[in-house]
Length: 418
Image (tube, rainbow, N blue to C red):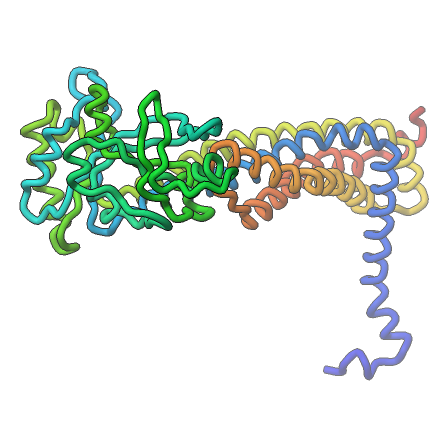
């Protein structure tokens, strides 16, 4: 077979002519579509609102879901690989509140089980941490002296409280970096051994946590006190209990023993409480995040469909308004495919305009949502590409019928229209 370079100039020109014609037609369709969109700027902008809302919602939802998942995975990853988590289900037997199922006596029972190296309840409350005339709202957690060894949280200054402090229920506290920055940092005071106030109680600062980083920002807003101190204040239910196993090899064995022990000492037993390993918690959270993400994306997709219907409606109006123009184009030699492509390109341009507005708006909305709820901001390139791809599909799908309808117009009837 001879290459095109060996052909005569006339034959080479004939070989390239169809491609050039196609390019010329595409350029003409693009120019005509841009002229139509620009000629009806306000209408075109209003038409794209549905696409803007749909794409923005999809991107923001993906960012929020990714942030939620990263947040909880970071939380569970902070626990050691040999730590079991005991959590009450939503409701105990007989519909009683699950939070009242665990007690201080259960801590002693769990600590006596074989292969258990440590036990810590986790009692979470919210409170203003006040120093002088400065205050910061924090999540205050009552835990045991063994809690630090169970987690990956480290101290940047000072020490964790001792077992003796725990037994006596002394008012000592370890502060996160954000709390220190917004109370002591403004005055340059070293927080160690200073006195802060929580819920009308005075506490001595014994340590400061290291910064949690972008995926554990809640650590910076967290303060820890001995759980026994909270019990002295009043009867507060346990939210969670952590059980540290002495070896990875004994995790399954201790998990079974803990479950059996809880069945004997807790009303409702296994149906009231869940005993999980860190990996099981991560897997559960991944499943929950995926389900939530699918639900929210489905709702956001409805906006894209509504936007697509809006585009189809405007395109049908445009076909009606430009019937005479279509007739003239066909009369001077335009093929039905040229008319169809012109309106398809116009629909795609409307979607492209909507996508161009929606992407930064969706990224900004995702940033505001994650900031509002304290989750890490993780932009998702796949979500952006998926949203734009869906928008293009919507443009083609909902623009196809008006384009075909325009292409099938009888030129004689079109030219007679007013």
